[in-house]
Length: 72
Image 1 (tube, helix red, strand yellow):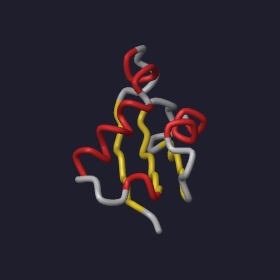
Image 2 (image 1 turned 45 degrees about the vertical axis):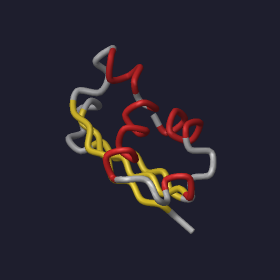
Image 3 (image 1 turned 120 degrees about the vertical axis):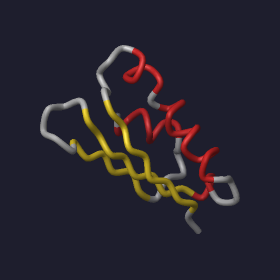
Image 4 (image 1 turned 90 degrees about the vertical axis):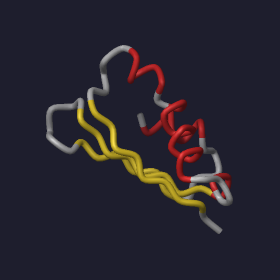
């Protein structure tokens, strides 16, 4: 997942992936990237979901929490 996010946000200053339950299917991701600056929170999250579309579709990710922020 980290690789997918880094590919989607090559300018990211922060990419964190946290397994919330230890079961390998409930995650929290944090992405801070200048490319997110000026976008609405909905648009920022949409881009995160797009980056993780494959593992969401195949069931690898059962539950996902996304935190995003623009960065200077």
